[in-house]
Length: 477
Image (tube, rainbow, N blue to C red; front, side, top):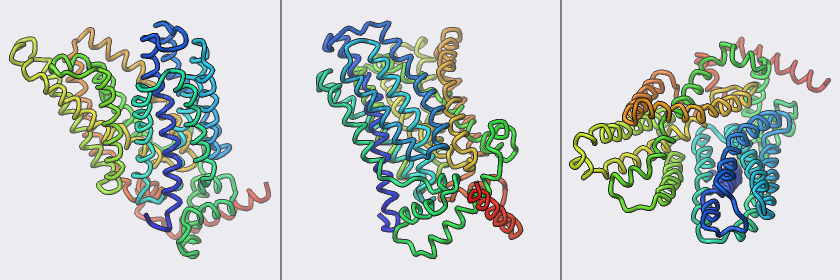
């Protein structure tokens, strides 16, 4: 661990505690709903109530995401993350007191609301406080801890009683609050709102053992970048229409769409069928455990590789693995009806294909797209862009319904071949459109998207003049 960046690693640990808490509490339903079915809970929770409980999830995520976009630019990244821990704690109080279905609805609403906040702001915060050469790895490390928290809930939830889990679960959000409270605010945000001295102080903390001259140089570059970016409009209309953001919009929305259509939900819905086809003696519930464990392990591997081999390479291999594994599943089900006995004897191939799909998807597409979403947009529209992308991601729900309708009309094999082709198109899109952002500063990424090899002397003079005008306006206002 580099001494000069020690606080950056400490902050990563703090944010990881928060994301693991989000994974822990938002996976509560996986072991606990089963306890209702087995009459191990304190009250009844029927199928209709369970369905309504799960329908709250996308609503809570959507509202939390939009709310995060509003307070993140108004009160800061750190304050927003702290707000999420408080909301999660209130949800945990309802869990401990739960004696009726409506209390679980409130709990789920508050928990998913807090998850929407953390999922939106966490990446933005990490991108703004971590150095370029470790930004991708540390950001992905915090995301993989979400799945670690999910795995903990699955393992612990199966061994403790319903009431014991509910009484003690509030410890997780309280621990997150304690972890997030001492971390520094993003210097980018502080400069954005005109708190120059505080921004310099926080930057010095994040680079604690770097020489004063180097900090001064870095701070001036950051201040110049913030001033330049904040000169541009932050309206939603300008965001979607301005040519300056067009390439970033195409890349990020394209990757988001390919992820939605990658087939993750379709494959997960086939777990029981694939276990039967492969004659694999495995409880379907254990398949869920394997799924989460793969996300944890491969998420950590992705974090270790992303700043070494790059975003593009991991995404390309991810698309290759997804397309080949889905093609194998399509081929199997396509010929099964004609060569039933011979094909079923190698049904384990479908299980292997599913494992490869989960590994490939977790290695790149499911995680790296979120790092890229934050890196490609300038400060004045960064929060708006991330919120818009997450709201756009909500299209996954109606699209999954459409996939089921397509399966009913055209057959399962047609769905699989379509998903395989989509992954191939994702590979082509990534290869020709996505630039590599590995080890590049946020400033360098913006220059790359604009096609600038460097900033001209004249532009630097203009920027300095804008900086002075911006500073005078803040002081006088």
